[in-house]
Length: 50
Image (cartoon, rainbow, N blue to C red; front, side, top):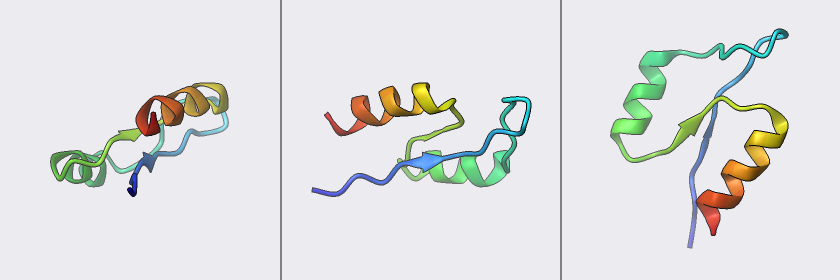
C-alpha cells in the first residue's frame, strides 16, 4: 500500500507559504496537503497512514 501526502512549506515565521493553486489541484485529485509545524506534521502523517 502506498500513501502520497503533500507537505506544504512554512516561512520563517511559521506561516504557510506555498502555491494554493497547485495545492487545490492536488487536493481535488485526492491527495491530502497540509502546511504544519514539525510536531503537527508528525501527528498528521501518523493519522494518514494509520
